[in-house]
Length: 137
Ligand SMILES: [Cu+2]
Image (cartoon, rainbow, N blue to C red; front, top):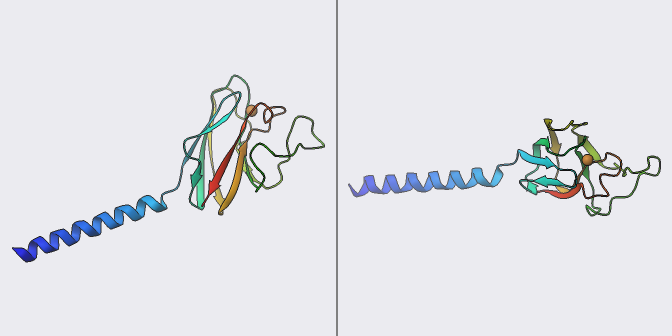
């Protein structure tokens, strides 16, 4: 009886250990909500690897999501000298493409550890606040 109890206890501890490990490596999907003045995320950091972004435009005009790997702060991205109202997309790894009002799209990118900025680069949208910092560990 004592042996059986020991086996059960050991099994439970093993299960607990496995559960903990799964939680640490879990990554995404990241839910992204685009409003007319911001980019909202349900999580601001994920583990490196294939990361799926589920993007929804809840605003009243067309928006998009651009994923940029950069050490520049989210509110310090440089303007694009060739396109007034738009920002430099240097370091861009991918984007949703244009999303109509109410439209949802998802896309997956292979992300390496580092700092990222997620932004909307429709003319003028970055300036009103459509950008947010994101971290891949
Ligand atoms: Cu926008």
